[in-house]
Image 1: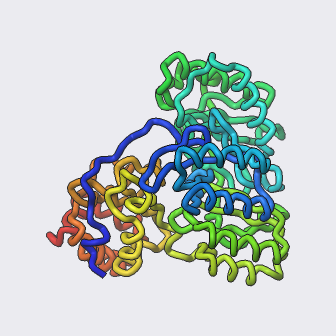
Image 2: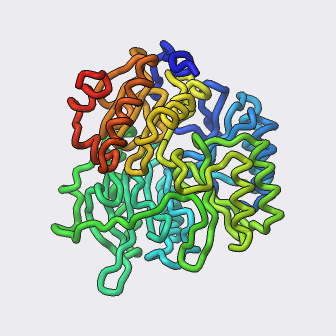
Image 3: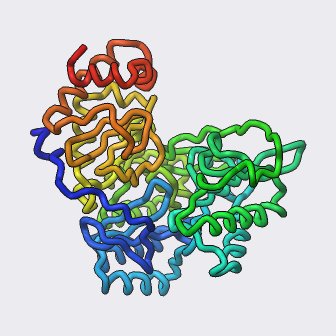
Length: 445
């Protein structure tokens, strides 16, 4: 294929919106309006998902996304159809959370390996925030994580405020931190559940005092800390939500959506097959994934084949598990490149980058919606070309900016260099450093 054509950049700069799309306030994108749902129920039976798929075709363009944080998006809506979608979802009992985003692990309450079930604390916090009403004026994208641990925990998820369950002397406490994941968040205190809501409300009040755009990183941890010293954080590794996974005594099938998206037709075919296999529930999960409950282990091969037919990722070794990409030009007005074409290019010309040691972030523009955190290696669409970003966010200063036609040869040179050494891709890229990497991709070594 011609590299220059599918990766060609457009002239439109990215538009930072400062808010998240909801059912009540859908957002304009490159393929119509987009509405994001944060389902109240932890999961839906296949029949309820079938209803969702039908509504996405009736009111939108039949494309659904699962976001990096495990929310659901319905695309291609109009001003008229968005309102009717909200009504039809309510009539079907498919309700969505509004207000402050409070996230818990997708298997909370089912995974016997978790330290604590974070759902009661999350619900208590939602109720307390709702009771505060207009007294709290918070940034639209503010996020709180309540992580009770377990197999598919949220230790790697960045949040403005984190509550992580820890065991101390036989008791369960909640470690409260600011602006980061479980390892990088600035710890303030470890408190029993009975005190946790009050501490978080104090932080939300402090954010309100700073203004409606304030985020967790804007708070002064020294002024808010309740403990002078705390034990160092311990992040529990969480596997990719792909394949058949055992969480305590629970067995679930995890599937990933390529580029976080599935067409309603493929979703319907998959769901009808799941019903025949005895699936009881499908849950949204971070990492653009869905979790299927109720499949008997002896039917695992059938379930995997069914998901593959629907175009879903079912193999933990699939190289696409190590690529995070947004819709780009195919579904966003700010997209300057086509990450799908870029993925094809990576798989064919730079397989050594996909050894599993790093996450590749492909972003249509500098907003980096698909992966807001820093990534070991990223390619970002810009008006001047495709920016190569190392250990940074999509919009961070790049190592270099390449023309679309030059990207394939540059990636091929990098892949050949990586294959020639025994170290992992991420180790070699770190050793090369920005100057060495720039020289290599520009063939100046």
